[in-house]
Image 1: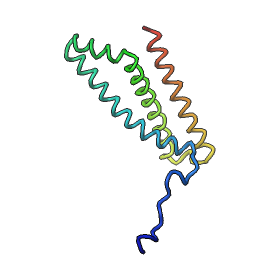
Image 2: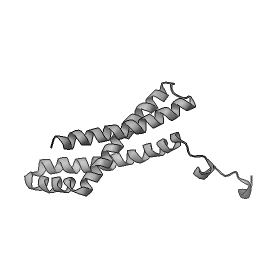
Image 3: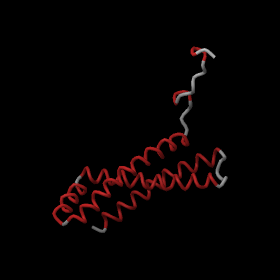
Image 4: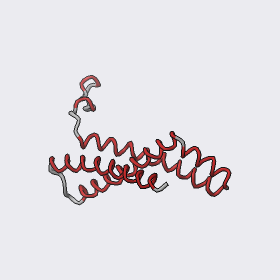
Length: 128
């Protein structure tokens, strides 16, 4: 087959966006977010082991507005990746492949992720 006659692989612009497509992409993005968030967690733990001066510095950074935004993003990533992973485990067991069930479970993952993130922050900051 000549190089000019080769079929082109479909690109994202060819497909109509669906909830399952968006969640698949978000699952990958949140996986990267979790890896970066674990670096922050490691930094915080290393600071705790280094002594009170360094820990107070890191704690002040993580308690700032940008630190709280990063913590919120990490928490959203954690819950989304968890619940979407459970959804994938259910698929691995052979259930939930009907189109309406796939759409509903996708929206359920989004809703539960947001609710759990908000509950986590309400409980965390409500007790302070």
